[in-house]
Length: 88
Image 1 (cartoon, rainbow, N blue to C red):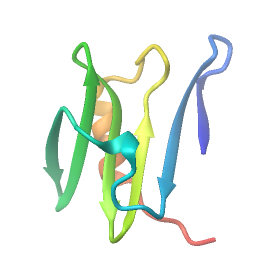
Image 2 (image 1 turned 90 degrees about the vertical axis):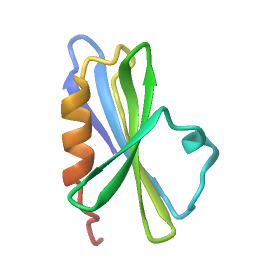
Image 3 (image 1 turned 90 degrees about the horizontal axis):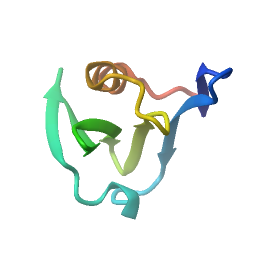
Image 4 (image 1 turned 180 degrees about the horizontal axis):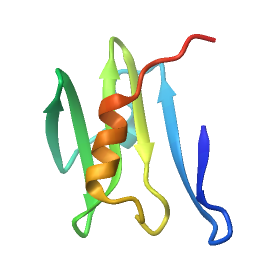
């Protein structure tokens, strides 16, 4: 899913998931943090979070920041900590 942060500036962020426990994209996190029992995997570049990931069973999910990393680190972590799996 792609969400618009500021479409005028071309700023979008993404939420993705795959039925794969260890996708290559999620190798080598910069750090981890556990919030309300959910272990989050943090990926940073220059101190700014670019991706925050988590696993549910054998599935992996992640939020990708905008190309310019405009979403603050705290907000990236909060979004990942509160995401729930929808049913389609």
